[in-house]
Image (tube, rainbow, N blue to C red; front, side, top):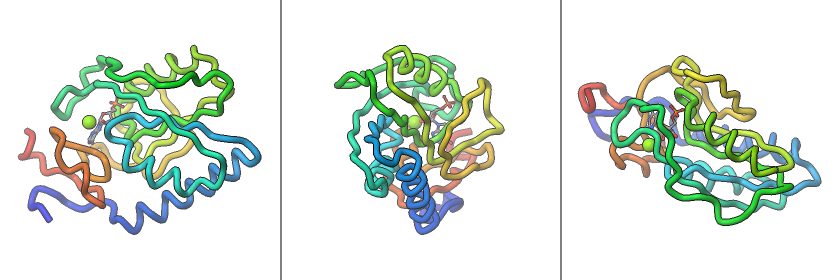
Length: 177
Ligand code: IMP
Ligand code: MG
């Protein structure tokens, strides 16, 4: 493992928690279909595992936004770089995110997606950093609440690296400070 990383969440703990989230979603949406919207690129690994633990009829689509640029601080600007392929009107939508930090990205996305007439819209995030919140965003499903440090792995990147790590680790400040 890289000397720049301090492990925070082991793969086993992540898998266990995702199985629980899948069970919860399966119960909450019993008898319905869910449409997962993964926010690229960070959520792709989480969505792959989560979708396989939901025992319902599942469809998915992806959206790509850029809010951070390449660094570790949110600029507050959200830009859609890839929109959905299909309409979400009348669907039970769950937005799948890797992490909610300031909340700016999801706040923007939630308003945009709600204007497109889904039957319901909830947020599911693997990680939540409540300490960094700038706008009120409340994910219905949260994998783990974590401290306000910059983390990578399991889909999360620093300058497009570390996404493939099977665990989540805190990136040493000296790497990006
Ligand atoms: P927010 O708009 O500040 O809530 O940030 C949302 C996006 O910023 C996430 O989807 C991530 O791509 C990125 N981000 C926020 N915190 C971290 C982190 O600790 N590590 C890696 N990416 C992060
Ligand atoms: Mg990122």
